[in-house]
Image 1 (cartoon, rainbow, N blue to C red):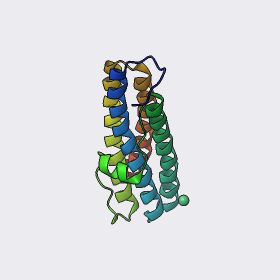
Image 2 (image 1 turned 90 degrees about the vertical axis):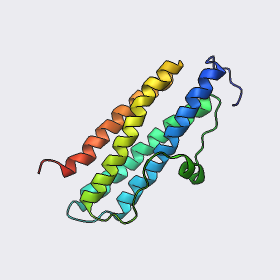
Image 3 (image 1 turned 60 degrees about the vertical axis):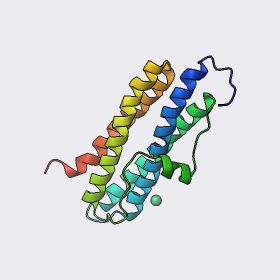
Image 4 (image 1 turned 135 degrees about the horizontal axis):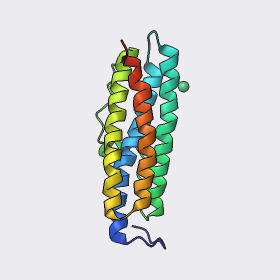
Length: 159
Ligand SMILES: [Fe+2]
């Protein structure tokens, strides 16, 4: 870890940096999964899904940015390369074979919900570790993820 004048103890910071690093890999993975869906979706809801998936790509980029910069301000190194992301992500691989809108909706809502579940657990984990600010950051991300789970999964509901 890098030296910092931040008053959180190095024990707290190293614990929290590890958790943040796990979620950074997932958020970066989500950035690519949403682009995969944005580029390849076809079918009757094409334009709505094409645009929604790109909007979520922007949101995932903001989540990654918040998480990465928190890592660095705590004295850690943000692992932002595609190689580090591939090694560390906990999300299921996104199938290259998905074409239809309903299948992209199913795959992407599952990925977002899995990410959301882990972020929610991280609120408690980092709060208990002694870093209320990171817990607050995860709370902010969690609320946004819940919204996008709703936006995506609603396309396959109500029938
Ligand atoms: Fe585009």
